[in-house]
Amino acid sequence: MLLLGSVPCALSTVSAAQSMRDAAAYPARPIRLVVPFPAGASPNDIIGRLIGRQLSESLGQQVIVDNRAGAGGNIGADIVAKAAPDGYTVLIHSTTLTISPNVYRQVPFEITRDFQPITMIAQAPMMLMVHPSIPVNSVKDFIAFARAKPEHLKFGSGGNGTAPHFSGEMLKAMAGIPMSHVPYKGGAPAMSALLGGEVNVYLDTPTATLPFVQQGKLKALAVTTKQRAAFLPDLPTLDEAGVPGYEMRVWYGFFAPAKTPAPIVVKFYKEVAKAVDDPDVKSRLAALGTQRVMSPPEEFEKAFRAEAQKFAKLAKDVGLRPE
Image (cartoon, rainbow, N blue to C red; front, side, top):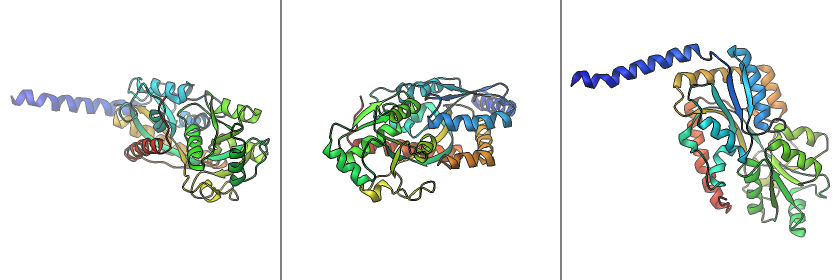
């Protein structure tokens, strides 16, 4: 009986030793970084490529960006959820991952079961932006215009269940205004639609949108956090400008498939931390209106679960139903 009872312990010791050897050799081949949105003006893509280049140099292995867009980021996320848990397939995702289960009736994965959070990378406020053709210059003007022309405003997003979609629905509910939602297959086509006038309202982070605001191609009316943003200090918050209680912040983070060995997860986290601390990466993130926020795997996992619970409640509060 003692011999039989010692087998699991021995197997556990062998498994742990193997994990340590795998981590020591990791990475021994290129890493696939899945971005669940199109290349271009999608914040996940911009941040993923920026950090991926730095990781390629520090790890001595190429980090290959693989854009797998569709279904509000769920197609790319599902690829990672079903990948081998060996550290060679990694996902960069955002707040959207915790929103999707509240918007889609069927999601092909369970977010708190099928992913191993590695680290949060950065966070950013969102901005309420309108096409220059909309004759408003403040949030109060915007609300009055929306109520006066109930069929006129269309807000775009990178797909159902994305942070811009959820933010627009929150704005509709909390401001009591009519707007129709037009989903696209990612932030890049949504931004193109806004610039071209196909839609006339958009809420998204400054990561891909700030240059267009600075060039006067879009009008920013407010930020979505409770505090004003350093990159546009004169821009009011939605909370202070006419939508009391409104608050939305988007974070970005890395995920591995569930059951990825802890030593590999920790090693990847440490390499990302070094990459994000690089002066050039830090300055470029700041220029995009994005704040560096690093957290070790165990902290990110707790925060991720809390975010999932928060958005489940918010979805009910604003009356958002799965489709």
